[in-house]
Image (cartoon, rainbow, N blue to C red):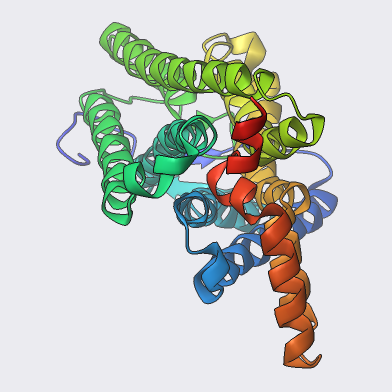
Length: 338
């Protein structure tokens, strides 16, 4: 008996990917290393550069942290499975893996909505940005995201623990998730499906609604700016976040609304790879390539051997031209154009 349920199954076998295992091992290993280096590098860059000590990058550092944790809850076990004849995970290990996967995944979904609100305040209320989005408010929003993510994971984990698993114990997936586990349970899974649909539906609906309302207001504000340059600068602060939202919510929606069919298991694995492995790797590149301030800070960090006065000159030049927009959305000059 494990964790108080009435299961005869004490371990599961993760079937994962049965072909091209050596090639996939190399691909996933390189992807995981890139994820760790990219996201940890983003965190260090934000923490060590005073120019990036504003709410937008405070949230971005937590997004990078979540991507590291999120990927680490899945990928190491996936990699070890390629090296073993059978990728075995204990019942307790399976439930633990799912819990942390759910915590970090849900928290990231909520944090992306928080970041959309941050962009709304920055662009629509630029003169009050640092007052509305104070450090205290930022910390409260981040803590609230982690708390909501943990509560959601706890609800789903508790619902899983009431199920019995009598065999077989073969999970046609590369990690422990609700849909493949429900297919193996010998209990009535109706309540679990209702809980899953309700919780995930509520989180996705409210988050997407918050993002949609925020960007509707942002687009209306940008549209009211007469200067084409002003519109471009304002919108450029949002493009990286929009791309991250599209990647995360797009793959998540496909995964969970297409996951209860046995015939969709292979498609579900493909979507899960994108959702759990590829997206965490891409996020730091999206934010660094699409964000002028991150790019300039990264350039200064990489050329730190140059004379200090050169860096100061570049910093001041960038600040006078773009910092107000990057930090606070629309500059006072652009607001005057309206």
